[in-house]
Image (cartoon, rainbow, N blue to C red; front, top):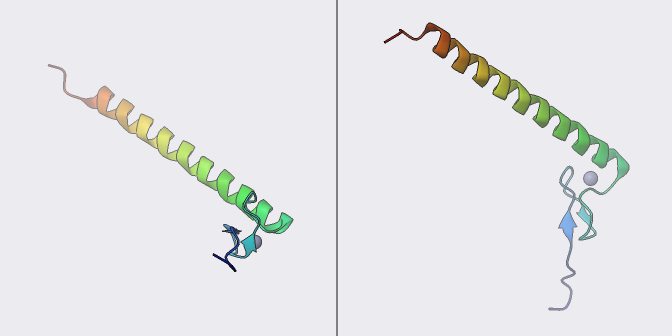
Length: 64
Ligand SMILES: [Zn+2]
């Protein structure tokens, strides 16, 4: 199909980019890294909260 070049879109701003790239610029790359770090911190936070909840349930569960 003429006129259709395989390409992707920058995951941050949506600009058309090369198929082997994820972001269009250094700036968008940095934004992506920041988002990834935020996501990871959130996951760790949720896992820690879940573990504490399990621990509390275990500690305060009525003994049989
Ligand atoms: Zn971009």
